[in-house]
Length: 176
Image 1 (cartoon, one colour):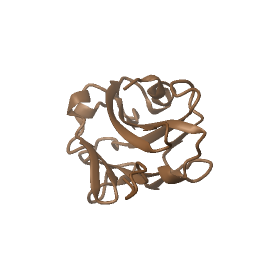
Image 2 (tube, helix red, strand yellow; image 1 turned 90 degrees about the vertical axis):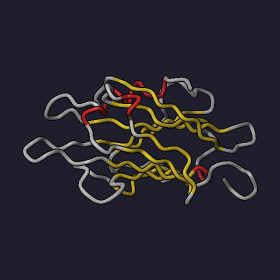
Image 3 (spheres, rainbow, N blue to C red; image 1 turned 120 degrees about the vertical axis):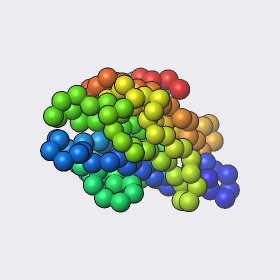
């Protein structure tokens, strides 16, 4: 939070997972964010950010992206700058989807998978996907703007049986 109590400022969603064993197709996960208008917070998203894309105004973007999970620590990172996000938006839903190339994969098939949401050095949320082990995609967090304009985080861990494209279409309909 900002020192003045104005809510969340710059937040990072970090993701890690172990790479596939030798000889198996790569395990490829993506962080996805959907942004919703103040007047239609559960309708169609105004825009969706994923992979190496960014929001039209640059307030939501990928700063690290992995297609394999190779690397130390968190190998995929999305940054959300709520202090700069237009007042036209009142809700942002963030989730993770597993690419299904090479056969069906669920979170239960992954090892050492974890998502971490931070603001600066402060941990806001962490999850290991154990609660959605049978899912191929999951919402993680819901950020909402209150009447004063301050952004707040709500945990929204829900599993889906979708590929990334299908998940993007349905993830925003979940109510916290």
